[in-house]
Length: 328
Image (cartoon, rainbow, N blue to C red; front, side):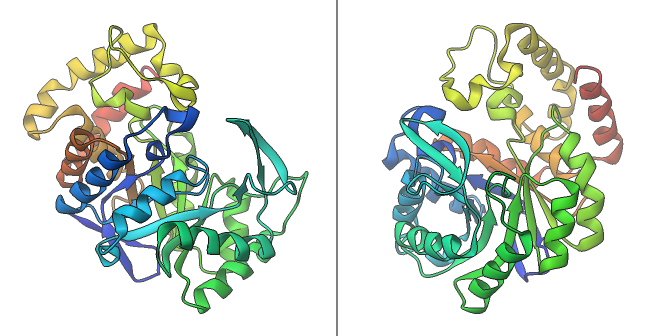
C-alpha cells in the first residue's frame, strides 16, 4: 500500500488507516464482538494497513482495551494513535454530552492530560503512543489556553511517551494557535465527499504548515460503500442516527451516484468503497490527506484496505466532485 508522511514527525503510515470507534461498541454503534475486532485489526496489518486509531471516549475505554489486546506481541507492527481531552471519570470540565448513563466533559488542562495518558497507556498495554490527538478543543465554559495544552503535549514528547502531536475538530483560528504553540503534525477532521466544508477550509493551511489532514468518516458511516440501500437492515446506533444520508430520499441519491460511477469502478477495478477512498486521498495537495476508515469486521477492512492502492486520474477526481456537488 502507498504510504504518507505524518507532518514533520518522521513517521510514515499507510495511506489508509483503521479507525476503532465502532469497536468501542456502546450506544454509539451497538455491541461489538471483541474477538472479531481483534481479528479485523490483525487482518488490517496483513493487508498493509499500519495506522490504527482509537480514543478513550470510544466505548468509554473499551475500544482502547480491545486495541491493547490486538497489539499484544505486535506493538511494533502499528502506528498507534489515541486521543485526550474527553473525560467521564471526573466532574470538572465543559459539558460535552451524556451517554450511556455517564456525563462526558471536555478537559484539556495539562495536569489532566498527564493523568489521562497514563490511563491510555495502561489500557493499550504499551509504553508509548505514536500520535496523541486532542479530541476536542476546550470550550468557553471551561477554558484552557491552547498554548498550555501544547506545552503539556510537547513535554510528553520529550519524555518519549508520544512521538507526534495531533488535534481534532478545529476552527481555522484554533489551527493557527496550535501551530504557533508547537509542532502540530496532524489534524483529524470529519470529511467526506458529502461533507466537504472542513477540508476545503483547512487543506491550504495544512499545506502551508506541513500538517497532515486526516479525514475521518470518509464513507459517511457506510453510506458511501454502495452497500446500503433503502431496503437494507442497518444497525443504526447514535452515530448513524445523526447522518441525514440514511434518510430514504437521500439513499436514493446515493444509489444514483453508485450507478453513475459503475464505469469508474470498472476502470479502476474497484468497489465503490475503494473509489471513494481513492477520491478522498486525492484531495488537498494530493499528498497530505490521510484516509481513516472504521472497521470491526473482516469484509469491511478488506474492502477499505484495497482503497489505499486506488489512484484516480485528475479528470475523474474533478468529475466525481461535480457529481457530488450536484446533490450536496
